Image (cartoon, rainbow, N blue to C red; front, side, top):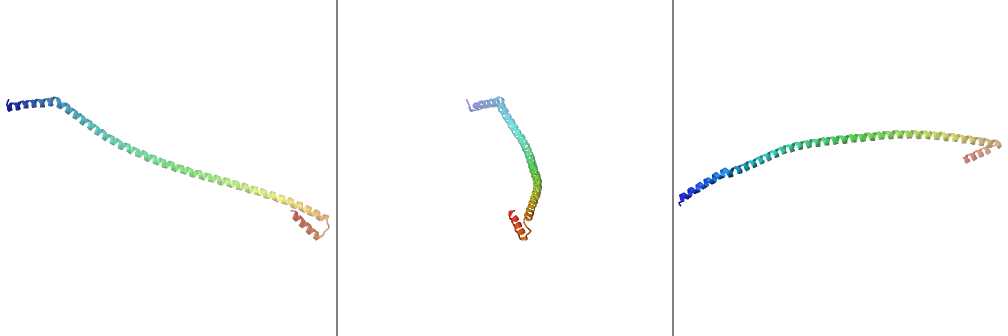
Length: 156
């Protein structure tokens, strides 16, 4: 066998191998590569979509957080305003109650003072009657009268 014949046979075998590869081996490989490229493309598309959805979700979350912060600040302000109002109402009620108590105490003090005056008047009247009685029992003597009045003062 000559080298030319061997070379020709090898070329024929090589061509058969190329034809066989192109006909039976290459299409499944190309299909697998195309399928993989499609999956990668779909994955990248899904990632881009997910990124866009994530950005939208983050924006919504920020809006909701901002709304919640605003709502919380508003509620806190309302609570503080209500607390201040309740304090003012309590102060006003306390002032009214204090005024009532002071008025009642003044009334009671006036009543006690009136009672004391009445008691004093009664005691003075009793003393005057006793003094007049004792003076009338004794003779009319200025010294005796002075002693008698001093004695009455000492009793009360």
